[in-house]
Length: 101
Image (tube, rainbow, N blue to C red):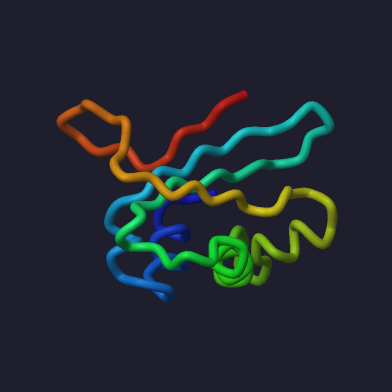
């Protein structure tokens, strides 16, 4: 999962989402990729389930492969969205992507 691909998918929903988000990517015990997005409450709509599906359909993880296709193929878990008032980062450079093992 690349930051530019996430920015592009989020921009199609709302341009403000593409500027500030946190994406937390991990792999669970059985090898499925989990993507948790933290979005600002004021920029995201109230229906996070619908937004999760929209992002899954728009997020390209390959030239002709979307995140949603990966969910259907059993490689990825559905995107989880958490609406936050502010981000927990206290660093001068804003970081958008966090990868965990």
